[in-house]
Image (cartoon, rainbow, N blue to C red; front, top):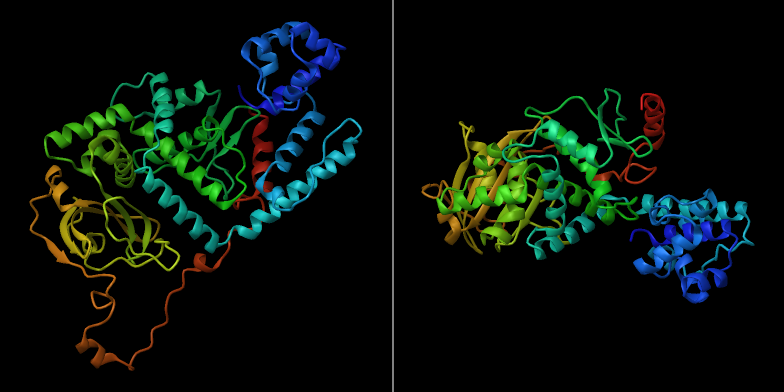
Length: 477
């Protein structure tokens, strides 16, 4: 039924306008005043039939009661105060809640809400550190592993939206993405002057989603950004309270965008046919839906276990050998630090994710079997170039499941004993003897490892720059 706090405020607003007390309204709708009080305070959800009776008694329509807009500025403040006082952050303070009664003046109410906002803002700034981010990211990776990286609720939302655009097969077009936005009440606008701290800006008042005009070849990036902006609305996201909330929202909007660009029914049919033909290849999946290799590989992790009965792992690794993204449910031992975080950890030099960088011809996928202490894995790797550096995208499966994939006949094989440092971390005895104590190297520092996230409104968006942008474009809406 939506937001119970706003519904309760709207019922109270129309009741007061009608000049009725709780007892009088209760007599008309056959409900005790105490029950109506719980409804008005957002503590109880009314039955649909009761809601209809209340609307008739107050001389309004049910849609007017269900409108998600607070009826007055005062009501908006009361709702915000109630939400904040029910948050985990406020509960940790051990302070009593303040009831927003009529005796509470507007100025006092504004001051209380302002204090809560500042409290939340300071908490966000204090936790938005690399250490907090790594812990939150590790917890999220573990939760997604338990779900086999599959979110059926988002799959359904995405498929319904795609169907509404009239899309039938193949790659989603920019026009179809525009139709999806229109269905949600938004217009896509491409602006040259987007704030530097924002990937996109959604103007809720005027129903506009502002996007950058430039895109990667094929337009995947622009379509994906538009769908991610829509996802925030479809998934009912609110401003995140913690860095973990932020990461979870980012995962959900990325998942939603991928599920739109590579819809469930079409993707499963494509991959199931490839499995039947024993010819699964990420590069084919990529080309069939007009997305990047990384997007196709990640989408494959969503569907492989739930729909193809395959266990697998995924790695995005930089040309420096460090992990940027990782997922596994096939038993591969990912490189992790003492906290369990895998981001930034070095990958074994024997793994396909790093061996692929040594190839001269990189136009097609690279295939390799790797023997590890956890068993033998077959892997497919594609390299690419990002902003100033190279990276590799790897999808791998246990040896027994290689039979379903193109490239299974490869004779390339490596043996990895990592995390044993003798595998590839320590130099061989000859090199150590030749150069030990005779060289000094100045290490390159990745500044983002030491820096906290930017101060200001979480998570690092420049509010002043965004508001100025909206003000400049509002006249065009």
